[in-house]
Image (cartoon, rainbow, N blue to C red; front, side, top):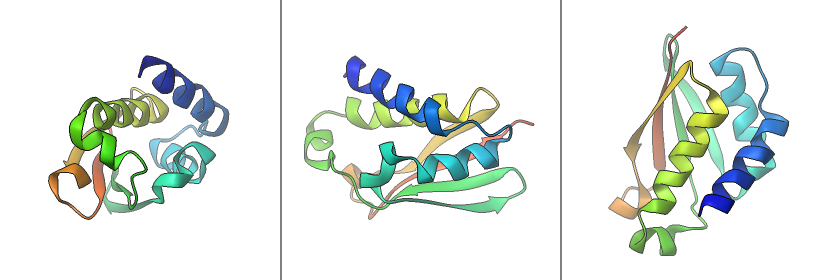
Amino acid sequence: MRFVEQAQVFELQQHVRAPSVGGRLRELVRAPTFAPFFPEYEQTAERTWCLRFRHCPLKEVASEYAQCCELEQRVVQVALGESATVEVQSRMTDGSPVCAFNVRSGG
């Protein structure tokens, strides 16, 4: 799992470089790393967004190993940087149709 996390972070560092959290979020959903998750995002308030993964290629494994979901949340957090807060809203493994994260910018 640690290798997968490091590989995803390395890949995202090549694509996610914008100075703002909103810009980094826009780059993250376009990055090849998350393409299999069919990501999308929308701004829900000032400096707040909802990031959704509409597909999870790891759903079967993640149903038994919650570490998979925790890994993806950490990868998103690292990619968006310290000025962002990433919180889980919903998970497919809990029966939701999407995995969703609330993303807030601290500045």
